[in-house]
Image (cartoon, rainbow, N blue to C red; front, side, top):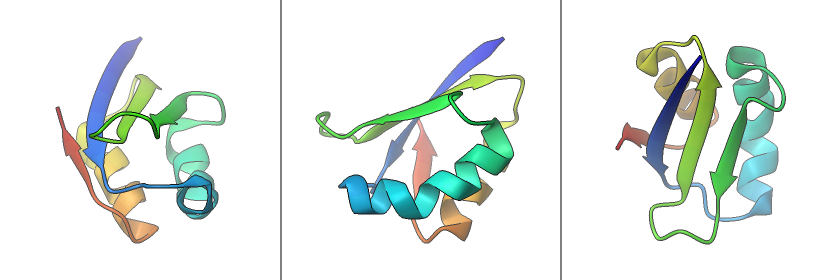
Length: 68
């Protein structure tokens, strides 16, 4: 299992509610989290996924993600 981290523009719990369904579909529920306290609003995803799939899911929800 791989862990991938992304810098995002997800800023609050409302943002999480919007991006959550897309990430649950792509990464699976409980396989991702966003650290809203970090300056980069770091999204951490665990699993056997491709970086492009996660970025596309976040973008589909109206947000950005850049691998760090």
